[in-house]
Structure formats: C-alpha cells, structure tokens
Image (cartoon, rainbow, N blue to C red):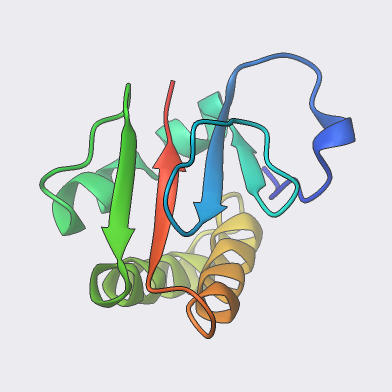
Length: 110
C-alpha cells in the first residue's frame, strides 16, 4: 500500500483522489495524490467515523478541522500497522502540508 503522487503511475481508474481545495469539475489533478481503491477501502472506516457526510461513491469536501482528526487517526494507524502504516503516515503528512495553504481537501470517490 502506498500513496501515489504522480498521476502518470495510475494504471486504471480505480483510485481515490485527494484534491487540495474544492472540486472544480476536473479529476486526475496535478496537485492531487491517490490511493488504489482497494487500499483506501482499508482506511474507509476512519473517514466514515470522522466525517458523517463522507460518501465512498461521491466527491466529499472535508474541512480542515475534520482533516486534522482524520490525520491524527492515520498517524495512530501508522504507528501500529505494518501493512497500512507507511501509506497512512504519508497521507497524514500530505494532509498536514496541504492544510497550510488550503481550508479544505476534497476526496474524489469511486
């Protein structure tokens, strides 16, 4: 499991996209990072618990405070799970970095 930072590495359309800011009518953005859909599915519960409006099959814009809670949960996971940990920690770091210049991050679901 790994965070994909370069969209040229995408081999299909089965990815979850994390877009800094709000959705502006375009997918596969240069500023986005991606997780394989099957990998994200392992993290989905964190998003559902922290963001009741989260919809796996929709585009969900999440505010900074909620993202901070999600990132904290991802860091806990990173500390205890060898399989999911590296990508969870990398996503948490990316989120923290994006929140320095964005008030929201949008999850572009399936």
